[in-house]
Length: 298
Length: 298
Image (cartoon, rainbow over all chains, first blue to last red; front, side, top):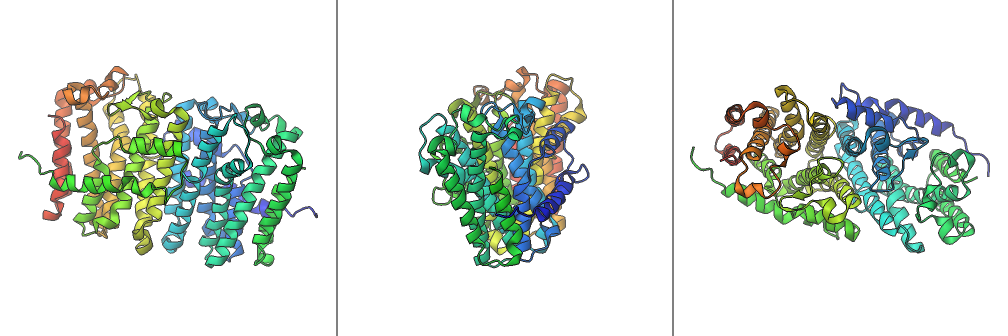
């Protein structure tokens, strides 16, 4: 497989980085200083910004204007960031580090961490609702907001975290593991692709294909994450990524063997690509994201 | 002052009670059983449903159809309920009881309580976004959702809780106390009135009057709450309401004297009424709510 071009990805990632704090600027949102510190700390902590880049790439693939989609792209990153802050809390996964830095509750205390998460989740909907695109195309904006809420809520991400906590230490069952991954990781990535399709004005069939693409990409993302947990590249090891197994969390290779995990990753890559079959060149950036995510395991 | 008629209030409260769980029905939202238990426990824990009733009454005052507004009314109650669950957490106000029953984290554990709050906040936006009114009047729905997010977020309720925690044990300053109340209580009640006005199709000046009404009502609500904390009626005493003072939390009468507190309540009642001056009979239900809230202190 040829090495994927990361140019489009990096360009869009740069666009997101540039706006991520701007939509929470004191001129737009007067938040108490302590809350702002905690919110900005977690937003600035890095990450690949995969979800917003998927949203922008999907929007662009159906002919949307990326600039108009940026508030929605940042909103999905706020939702992702809030979920990391809350997942790290002592009562949840109890992680002291996130991306090599102290997690939010270690840096600011538990109360501030809970509130920073709550704020990010809420501000995500404010930023989308107050966006120029929401004024121009309220129907599309509403549909995108509803899709994000459904993916992030009790049926999706929050429900997945609940199931994940309940599964800790239990014997692994393949169907349960995929149910958790579908809710916890895949729902939000699928929503990112779906939102891009809706906001870019894509017709329904294309939007559904994009959602299917995001769903497979999300599962792939989780499998490669689990594989990294096991193989533990030097780069990732020091960053606290490899703790899931130690905590008795269900990882794919630990539960079902590395061979099954690698085969599943291959199948999911193929599934994501096949969901894009109706897209020509305009889908290339989305295809590159599949390759970028898949390449994480090597 | 004549005793307020509670008929309209009780009728609307009944409408809200009827729908509160229905919008989270398994047919609409497949959430894990444990999460559902925690979510439904807190929603069923009672309360006066003031925010949704204000929303419906404001909508009706500008000619809106209450039935269409119900998803938004329930959404604001979800947001209020999430805030109570998170405020009660050990890292926050550490309350073991809420309305005479064990608080969420006491009944279900901290992780489930955090997730139940996260779920309610997120589902609020799903229920609004998927409502029939959002399909029919997406512009109004977007504006209402943005208003709720702004009121509930870092500038409003979440920011208020952060300031409240920072103020604990500190000497009381009147301007700071009102700043906290404005964010923590008043913002959401003001949003309820504003949302009703927007969704009911009210013209801008009327919507602003409704928001002003809700702002004063919210401050009144907090002052009467503080007065109840001090006088501690028998009904409320056993329910853990009177703990704020013991915890060194800033209450109005404790900090500035009962006389000042009672005078402030009078002034806020008058302010709320005056914001309704452009409303005729159609504003009577909103006026009754002021009387109902004010009467809590007797």
